[in-house]
Amino acid sequence: MQSRKNQVPIFGLIRQAQLSGCGTHAVFFYGLKPNREIEVEIEPGKTLIISISGVSQPNADGIRRVFFQLNGFPRTLEVMDEAFAVPGKKKLKADPMAQQQIGAPMPGKILEVRVTPGQHVVKGQVVLITESMKMEYAISAKAAGKVKAVHSAKGELVEEGDLLVELA
Image 1 (cartoon, helix red, strand yellow):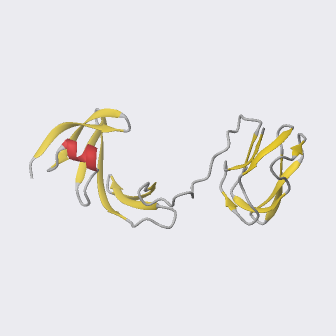
Image 2 (cartoon, rainbow, N blue to C red):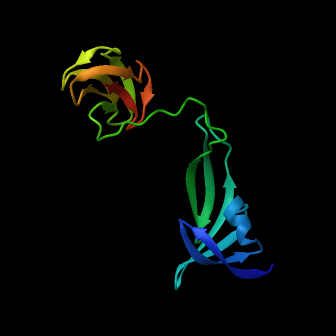
Image 3 (cartoon, rainbow, N blue to C red):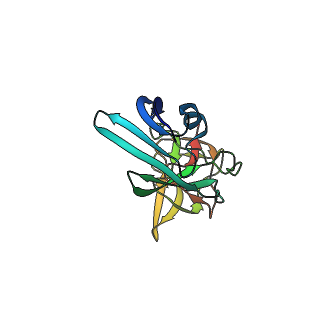
């Protein structure tokens, strides 16, 4: 196999790369093929050797595991495969700076929803009860307002930052 020096974009930067038997455009557009190796010089004297070992099938949430080697050490990376993602499964995220959005402070389960759309709430009023690590947490409103929407239900599992309640 012939080796040649080419430009390869890595993390938004263009670096010199030594490709073993595959064109730069193929790696850029289609990714590295299994059992192929690429050498990426990130700065003079520092070279990364990357090879892909395999890619798993997507799980129920559309996540694939990518198995690769970086300088000879095995690594694993989880990547969302948008083609297999479950439609409607993706939750909205709360803006932590918006007083009208109440987000989940940590992963957990919704035990109780204490508000309904149209209801008026005062600052500090408990709007939800969640359970995380076998402890219950009261989630309160950051500001006074009218409940615009409730984005969670009793028994639902939430991740950190998921939008739970919106105020108007």
